[in-house]
Amino acid sequence: MNVERWGWSSVAVNVMLSALNLAIAVASGSLAVAAEMVHNAVDVVSALAVLLGLKLSARKSKSFPYGLYKVENMVAVAVALLTLFTAYEIGKEALLRSATLAVVNGWVLGGMMLSALLPLVYSHFELRAGLEANSPALIASAQDHRTHVFTSGLVLVALFAQQTGFPLDRLAAMFVVLLIGKSGWELLSDSMRVLLDASVDAETLNKLRDTVSEEPLVARVKDITGRNAGRYRFVEAEIVLRTRDLEKSHDVETRIEERIRQAVPHVDRVLIHAEPLERTHLHYAVPLADLDGTVSPHFGEAPYFALVTVRLADGQVEQQQVVANPHMAIPKAKGLRVAEWLVGQKVDVVLLREDLQGKGPMYVFGDAGVEMRRTEAQTLAESLGWA
Image (tube, rainbow, N blue to C red; front, top):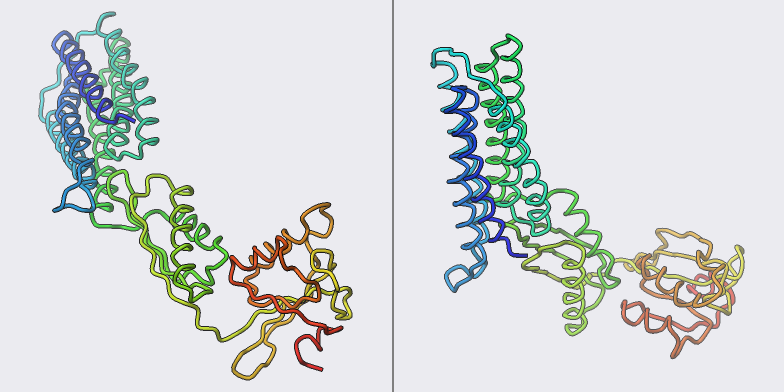
């Protein structure tokens, strides 16, 4: 998406609004319209700053290997400060200027309606473009245009009120000040969070954690962090893998990076710290033919599975449960689905009477680092060496 084009269009819209409100302010003498015109004039400068930020933020160099993405956030801070300064100037003018009645006619009212309609329509498309590009500068510009919809609407109400004998021009100007000040403060707060490397939002962090956990060879996600820089994100994860094989570890990291980029948009860089699992327990899975603990001669067709956690230090059982096969009812590929389910249960060892050599479950277990052991035992106790 050409975000620079949107920057230029924002400049054009603000120039048109400034000219329109200047003409209305001169014709009506309204303090509220003059305040709105000043707001528009500041936005012309802000839009030019946004355009500069969009151009600079896309560049990388040896001195800035992580890019100049935060230039957009710096521009957003500048926009926020200009907005707050505008609120101050308008408020001072509204409080100190002597009260005068504005000249209100059909031309003035029609012009103010256009002044409210133009930013309403434009902000809809600019905000959609900003969200699609994840550009804080464009989003900030669109939100500022939305503010103009409300402030121009207030001015229009004040002009209508004066027609009915209620002079609300000064009060409307103060409302404009409050709305501008609120918008500027929120923009300043959001932009400073990014410049200070605040974390991405909790929803995105949870999505990142879930995405990493979906990888079968990941035993545990120790920590995951993310930060924004302009419209892009940087992600860092500390994980524990169920393998010591360096080649497999590299493949896992590559798959995780691809999954993250698919799940979360606009990720510039993913840094993964992986370490092998130090085993203190083994998690066994045993297919059962019944609830009495008879080992099933089949894998995918087994109606039950025993899931047993054994402490390696002394061989003691810490946890044992028998669960129904969740894929018993499907007509095809039962073994494959059961294997994927057991991998999701973080099983380390599967004890089998059936030979799975060359079958789908063997490849699922192999990719996930799950060990398959053949057994001739007839009962669960015998297969685990308890009898």
